[in-house]
Amino acid sequence: MARRNEFKPDKPRSGFLSKLYLTQLQRRAILKWLLYALVLVGLSVVQDVILCRVRIFGATTDLVPAAIFCICVLEQLQRGSVFSLVASIVYLFSESSLGPYTIVFITTLAVLVTYFRQSYLQSGFSATALCVVAATVLYELATFCMGLFLGLTTPARMGAFLITAVLSCVAALALYPVFLAIGRIGGQQWKE
Image 1 (spheres, one colour):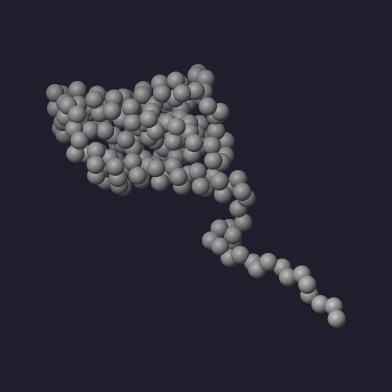
Image 2 (cartoon, one colour):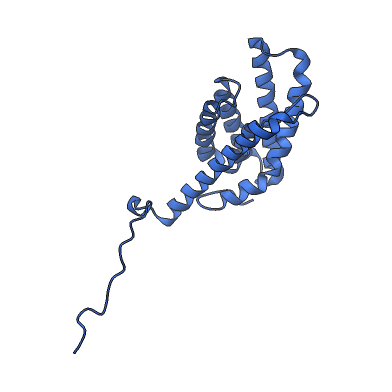
């Protein structure tokens, strides 16, 4: 006697992402941006819990803005500018930033250095390093000037702000391979 139904289809999977009807490229892009966000949250925790207690010549690191600049430069202007805006808003609400003006400073500087790199420089580590260092130093100078204007700091603390910029640049450039590896997961990116 022959069997009637030898073929049995697989059971339908009912996972979280299966109902979203996403392509493989879209899933990889979502994974890439979630990993970027996870790294930024981790950097924020490390900065606020561990590194805030370590002072070098009266200065601490400012990891999150430097990392935002690095990611923005790697992801080109369109995606990087949106990312810098969203990340700076999240940075403001994490209570780690100095005030609401950091949204304007981070987003503007990230867009400007990304535009500069995309228009005038070739892709590579040296161009990324130049842009991240320039953006981080300008960010620290802008926050120092805003602190002077608001009466939150004194001119004698200028050296500490510059040391903060140097420490933040070193940390962001040390994380460059991590950001580069995450950026290769999905979507468009410059070939570094």
